[in-house]
Length: 259
Image (tube, rainbow, N blue to C red; front, side):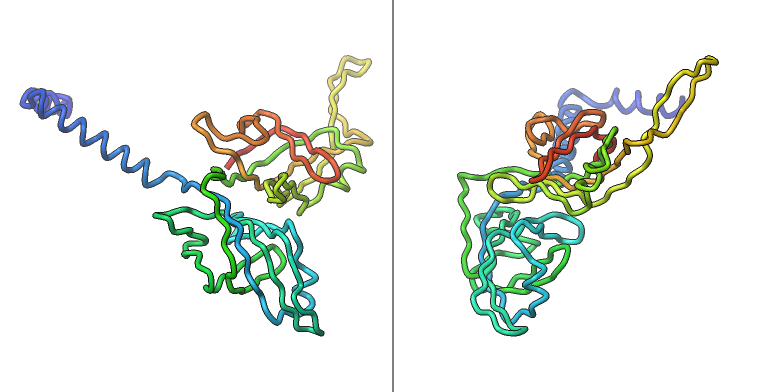
């Protein structure tokens, strides 16, 4: 009660101009905090790098479509790869990178650093780490797209055994530009249960002899708009359906968590 009475006395001493000034300050602070905390707008840039004197196991463990990571965050994908020279345990490669960049005052930022021809760059896939030198940067501002990385968990029921064999960790979806837009990073399989009434009137839960249930953790690149987050033009929302389109099959399920 004392607090409320004190607040009333404070308001009684303020005129309308003072009140409007305070209100404006609050709006500016809230808007500034929202601006500072918003996710950066990511855009595509094609970057070519030359990587020299790499051992055979590196060449054998990198391929077009591999995602690029910074920690566990997806920051791009591998495009075309050309072996410039090939000798025993000494290979030079020209690698095209489809990189997520931030355009800041006409400077392209990748992993916190300016992209410049002639500068060195470190890249990492789930299998290998490489250091190369940038030889070309292709960026077209008119093809700007806005993406946000999200990790979802999706539940799939009544999965046949053959389908469970196909749906494995590491399975990816590429878009028409050969960019990775989804990758399964974890898979948990459990029995599929069904419920039925017995002749005695008992409601029984029983394991299905054939079907399985899957919980998949999937990293996806969602389209960001004023109306929310979308994937394949479907809104990302817990309880809603989602489809991952791989080269072997479409994987359909329901979103059970969204980070």
